[in-house]
Length: 439
Ligand code: ZN
Ligand code: MN
Image 1 (tube, helix red, strand yellow):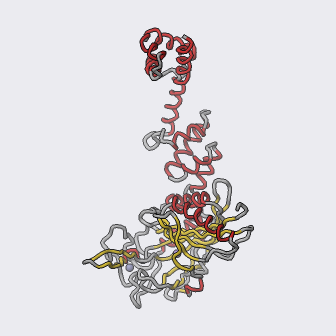
Image 2 (tube, rainbow, N blue to C red; image 1 turned 180 degrees about the vertical axis):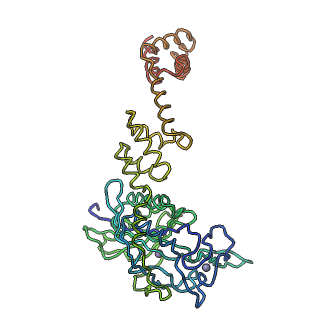
């Protein structure tokens, strides 16, 4: 069972941190807000209410699209996507179908693998159901504060093959929207939501089915569910069948996925153009300006770190936070100039050995420099100290010889203290062992 190919595509929903909702003037904040206080006829889906698109949200989507190398539809449109759910009072979601704002982009993983971005589109979020027990009855309540909040959907082609690739892709998207300042992408608050489409085949061709895994709110669990699905599909294919095309949910208790419903296709949504919103015509100059003024991007920071000599895993880690990435790049550049080993110095950031939030790059480097100069006591000088300590502590030496191995730690401490930290610990330990065993 080893000649299988997996095809994984991701759909990521990111809530924009907008002031106002997507199609009305309501306040878009909804986390820990008194339920149903940020609502109006538009976002409650009342008959006759007219949607007016939020221009800032549109430019935020263009930013994301450009940061993902997308082409832009200068003439885009909104469409109605029909489905029924209690948190969607209109019976349809305003989304985008055939003319999304952004399409045909790409993002490159640290190993050089390219993940194609199919589209980045804008839509409205739904309300939120709350299940509770009121007066002894189990009830479901709906909070419409989230209804109509600008939501961006980023869809890839099925180009990923492993859970690790999925995790790295998601880290890039998560960092990217934060670098751009358009979303806090907080998984716990639900402002970043993940769906994976998974298929497996015995040859290199995309098979005639896919399984969608929904409602997974951590990178770790999406990775686990991807692995789980790949194994599940392989077993079914081994029996000469195809897995059913369906939507599955992640079960945190069993650490597995469970079937939820058969997967709908685009035609089931009966998409058609939103008649209440005219075509959106974008100013090409403004699009170019956005592209020109893009800030540092996580994947670019990562590649820069790698080319400066930082190992790949560390670069991927340091990329996640913009301030840390910028600091690492400066540190790597400066370390290179003063002939420090870049990977070693920058590596200290990854295990918190550098207080980067409170120290400038030059402070850190000069501290490292003086430390490296301090530890310059040569072996002969160390040996003098070792001999001195051994002579002055006959009882401790006797303890060691009678089997108390910890006694050597005391002697070591004495030598280090006498050297005022200028001796190299490993050298001292070696000399101590040689002397104590030969004596
Ligand atoms: Zn509203
Ligand atoms: Mn969507």
